[in-house]
Amino acid sequence: MDRRALLSGKFTEDTLNLSNSEHSVYAYAKLLGSTDNAMVHFSLEGTIFALLPNGAKPFIGFQAMLKGVWKKHGQNSFQHISYETGFFHPLDSREHIEIFENPITNQSNQLSQIRGGPYENIIKPKQHDWVVSGDDVWIQEPNPRIGYFGSGETNNKNKQTAFANTIFQGKLSQLNDESSIAPSMMTYNYVSPWYPFFEMDNVEGKMYWQAVGKKTQSWSDIPTSMQEFLTTTQNNYFESTNPWTERTSTLKHFRQSSKKDKIRP
Image 1 (cartoon, one colour):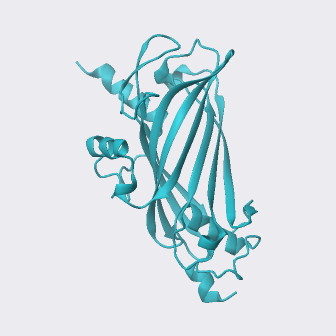
Image 2 (tube, rainbow, N blue to C red):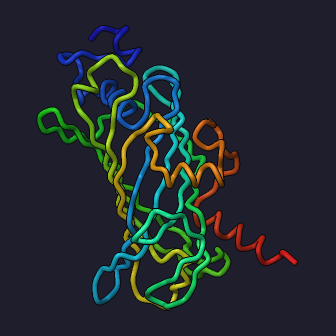
Image 3 (tube, rainbow, N blue to C red):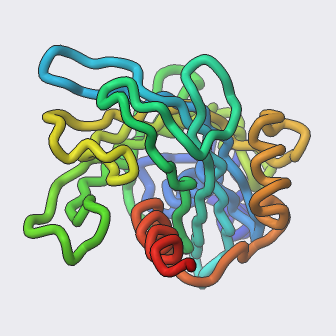
């Protein structure tokens, strides 16, 4: 393979070989982010299902905006810093809500925003597990998790498990072209204990988060409901490469917000 093409992340149809670790890391970066210094976003729309002993029931909707800040990191590697933000909405609308009328407990819940990052990763050459069918290509990212899911870590005696799996789908022909960013579709699946703001500690079951979305570079391609949410709550999020500095998560953000509410006069 032409060395200049490899360093720039440019391939032709007869040179991209996903079984080669250096080719694979460039294809990975191009599908999930960029092979150049760039910022990319994924816009997601999803539903949370309540997994109860008597079956699964649609519970609440959510929208999320994922941000990835990609940079070249030495030879054949990339630095990736990610953020996420979003909100919950009723099943029958896309309106951002802060109070949720819980159909399972018949109680009103004060919701948190969806929040995460910054998470930093260094992506080095490796043979990723690609699935290829014709011009379609997929890669999945399973992520088992363990931690405290209650309203406060000090109130949790035992850690609990969760599992997320993210699938990215694109086109081989677009991974082979000379652009640094390839279009990508995303499917997100996540099984977790009840999040504390739903106040369901005494309810047997779990949450199943399911969402689909795509990579987007234009503000105009974002759903109007997400535009309104960002404009009113985080108006620098889409343009900023560093929308906040302290690492957080949806659970941590909720716990910190709850503490602030308790100390208000």
